[in-house]
Length: 86
Image (cartoon, rainbow, N blue to C red):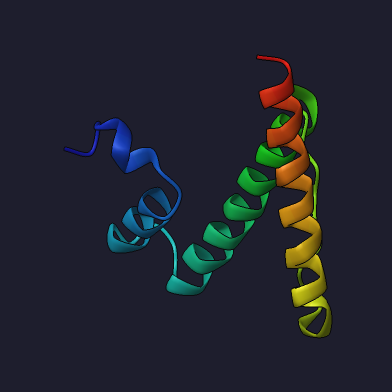
């Protein structure tokens, strides 16, 4: 079971080290956070290099409606371009 690939996922390996008494719970949490950040960084790098992506920042609550309209218009434009090329 421990050799299964799914056990190598972020979260499992750190907690198994804790359960086995190899590290403290605080160390396991710190490693889990660090490994999650590293994984997210690798994902962003992959997206930047492999795909044409339009990023939209929706963290500002006051601008969410405006951003939704902007995203909707962007998607509609992409669909229009695609249908014209058929």
